[in-house]
Image (tube, rainbow, N blue to C red; front, side):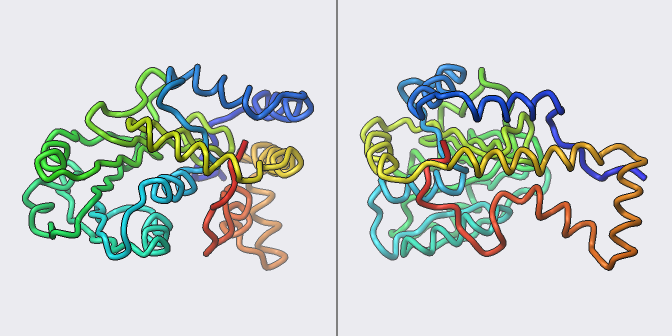
Length: 266
């Protein structure tokens, strides 16, 4: 029996993480190193997750209650919940099934005087062409945010130049996973400064919390080969456990229904 999804990390990666939890490095040093790797020293921010970064950006942007965010129709439900928590209105926009991108006329159909932001998600590991969406956003004076949680292509390609904000995730199920964390590229330096100021007041994720996550995932990697995974599946069936629920509990970044807010994650 084979697992349906293999995590993008090795046992060596996990042990490196465990050892690193014992190193006495300051949060600022870790953030600076991550941003240097991505060449984002002047435009980057390290967050707990894309969702917490999105929440932080909305906090810093200062939109008014009732303002509208156009959202591509396939996205993570928590992104919508965060929009609503800020008193904003999320307006779904159909996507072209061939490109997985909204076409300008689809955006035009739902545009109103209260529209302020366009949020598009790159899906299933691919990247849409932002050209049409970017031109529409510029012509209408809207901010363009791209959710790249599923579309990391390496530290040399961090964000489309046409986007005001680009958001990358390194959660457990992502390519190049770090078992959590996100990097945002924010073009507006004033907004980025406000985001950094707000996040400075957030508590950091504790080393113990991250170490526990590493050990859980170590167990998952250990049973990812066919024979041990088959034994695990049979044991779950014998004792009345759902193997999908068991595995999901390990890889899920946050409990169902919770929003990952008010933590820097570093």
